[in-house]
Image 1: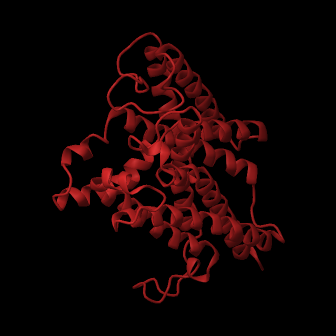
Image 2: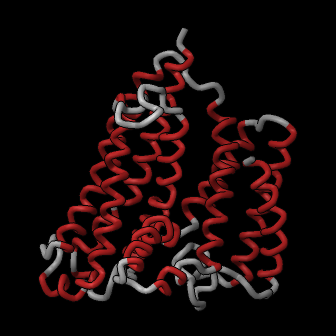
Image 3: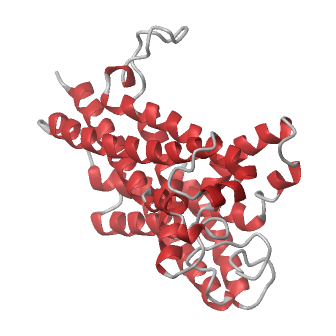
Length: 323
C-alpha cells in the first residue's frame, strides 16, 4: 500500500509541480491567497516551490520503483526516511493539527449554536487538503525506509532498554499537553493562567475552543500512559468483547506516531514564527507568556510521543518473539 500511494503521488505531483513552476494556476503554497499558511514553501515563488515539489516527486518515484523490485538498501532507505520527514514533518504547518484537533470541536460548537458552519468549511481548503496529501505520502516514505533500516526487531536486551527510554519519553509526552490544558481550562473558568486579565477578556469568546483542544490533549495524554502500562497491552475488563485479549502492538504505536507528526509540524511552525518575530496567536499575545509558550513545547511533545511509540513497539515485538 505505501508503494502504491507513493507511486500515484509521484506521477501526479511531478506533472503538477512542473506546471506550477511554469505558472499554471492552483499552486497551493501561494502566501497571498486565501487559505494559505506558514509552510516552508509559502515565502518562495511558485517557480521555486513547484520545482521543489517536482524534484521531491521524482525522488519518491525512484524509491517506489526500487521498493517494488525488492527490499531497499540502506542508502535508499535513508533517502526515503529523509524525504518522508521533509514532506510529513518539516514542510507542513499548523493546519493539519487544526483540522484534526479543531474540526471535531468546531463541529460540536456549531451543533450547539456556538459557532458558524462556515468556519468549518474554511478549514477544508485546497492548501489544507494538499498538506494532508503530502503528510500521507511522507508517512508512506518513512514506513518504507524504517522497515528496511530496522530489519528484524526484537533482539535480546532490547525490551528493557526500550522500556527505560519509553518511560522517560512518555513522561515528556504527557507533561506537555497537561501544561497546555491547564492554561486553556483556566481561561475557560475565568482564571488568567499565564496571561493578564485584560487579555483574557479580549479572548473570552474563543476560550471554549481552546478548552476543547486542551481536552483532546488530556485524552491523548491518558492514552499515552498506556504505552508503559499493562492496560496498554491487554484490553481492560471494561471493554466489551475484547477484555483480556492482547492489544495489537501496531494499533497504539501507529496511532501515536500518526498523532506525533501534525503536533511536531505545528510546533515547528510556531517556533519559526516566534524566532522570526511574527505574531503567534491573537493580537497582543506576544506579551502574554501563557498565550504562546505552551505551543513552543509542541515539537518536544511530538518527538517524545514518537520515541515512546517506537519503544512500545520494540518491547512488544521482543516479547512476541521470545521462546
